[in-house]
Image (tube, rainbow, N blue to C red; front, side):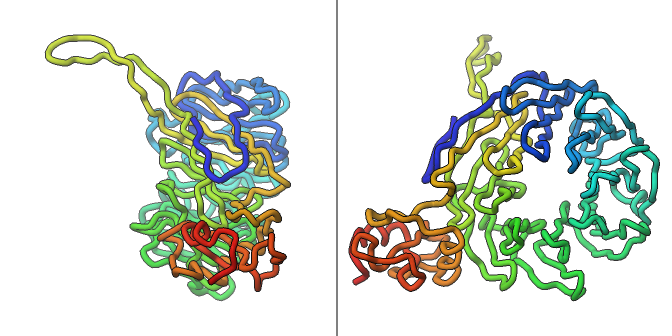
Length: 433
C-alpha cells in the first residue's frame, strides 16, 4: 500500500520473489541495470527490467552485499552463525558475469568495502588486493578494535574511517596503514563529506585541514548526512527527528515532517529527495521543504496464527507488519528499492513531471515552476512565513508569488516569498495586503 502526498506518480514496478528468508541488504549495480539482494538464505542478482533472477549465488546466509564501483564484482559477508549479530564471518568476492565465487577472505566484520577504484577491499582491519586476495596492509590497531563496524573509504581512496560504536572514531592512512586521527566517541557511524575534506559523527563536523570542529548540532544524535553537493546536512535531533541544516553557515532549515524515519536517511543522487524507514514503512521527503511526499507500506502480510481465548483454541487472520531492513536509491534516483523480513524485494518507479521532482507551490496562479535552486534560495532567505511568522515546525512552508503569475508577476526573487500553507490558501490569487 502506498499513500501519496504532493508528489509525482509513483508505482510499484517490480515485486521480486524468491528468497525464503529475510532480505537484509540491497545494492544497485553502478549502471542501475541490476540489483543484488542478500538474505538469510542466499544472494540473488536481479534484472530490474524483466524482474528475472540473473544469478542465485551459492553463498549461504549473507549479512551484507557491496557492488564494486567498476560493476564487475560483488563482495559479500556471511553470517557468523548468529544472524542477529552485526558481525559476519568471512567475506567472498563474486564474478558478476559468471556468478562464480573468485575469492574468500577470512576475518570478522559487518561489511567488506571496495576502494573507489575497485582495486582493494577493506575488511577485518586489513586491506586486501581485490584480484589476488592477498593481504596488502594491516591497519594499525584496527585488528584489536570492535569488528562489528565497517570501514569507510574517503572519496579519493587515500584514507579510511571507522566508528567502533563504543569508545572511539579512528582515521587511517590507506597507503601506510598508520592511524592518523583518534577521537573519543560512542557513535555507531561516521561519514565523509562529498569532497573528503570533513568527517561527521557525534552530531558534529571535523574539518581535516583546519583540524577543528566547524559544525555542531545541539541535542543531535549520530552522524549527520551530507547532501550529494555538500551544501546541506541532515542530523537526528532529540525530540525533533531528522532536521536539515546549511552545511556552511550551520543555520537550521527545517525538519522532515510526518513521523520521521529512525536510523538515518538517504539522499537521492540528485539531492532533491530523502528516503528513510522507521522499520515498518518507507517514507520519501522533498529535500527543500521537508514535506513527506509518499509513504510506502507494502512490507506486510496476513498470517493465520493460533489464538487462545477463554480456554478455546482456534486460528485468526492477523495483519503482520514485517520490518523493512534495507532501502536504496538507484544510481539515477528514478527508482527506490526496499526489502525486509517479508522475504520480498520491491522496486518503486517514479514518473517525472517536466523533468522535476518538486513540491509545487500552491495557488491558482502558479503555472510556471520555480526552479529547485531558486526555491532553496528563497527558503534560506525567508525561513518563516512572511505573513504570520510560522516556522517549519509549525506549518508546511511554500513558495508564493507576491504578485500572482496571472497578474503579470515574475519568478524574480524579489517577487517570491515564503508562506505557510494556511496563509497561502487564505491569500488565494491576490497580492499581499
